[in-house]
Image (cartoon, rainbow, N blue to C red; front, top):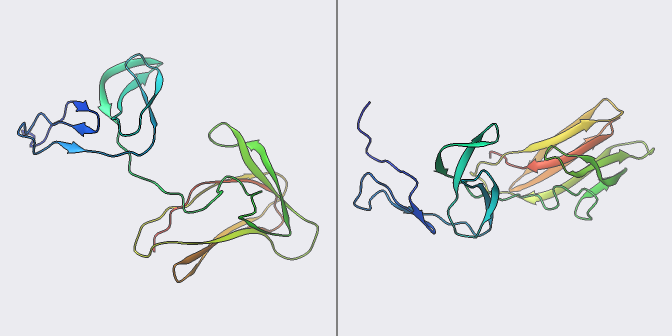
Length: 186
């Protein structure tokens, strides 16, 4: 194995991470997190870590801590869609639909997915909203949809300069829906 140029053994104090190779400080770095977060501690328990504190996370195998801790770092994320888990909120434009809030278990195991119900009116049945994105920045979209009674669901994004219209079109379908993340590549 080749000799590494950079090596870390989780050595941290507050928001500072220290490298063991090189040991002159060149490989050291700071990180920033403006909120609390969780980690698995040395006893295998999930605990909350204060804002700006590092997270040395322990791996579990069959409920037991195994191996050495690793530094848990995650990039910043921003959900561009307000009320993305609450289609009953007035933020959303509902066209020939009603929403039954917190009606089904979502993928995270909580009762917070909304049921979108089409009315008996003819025409387009939809839930939509327009929001702004930054050109040249990578974005991702993920949606949780569960079939209930009907057979067709259409999801589309419409690009108008830097505005995106997110439209959830219900065409002969009733769905349970939750947007977990929204990222688009422009």
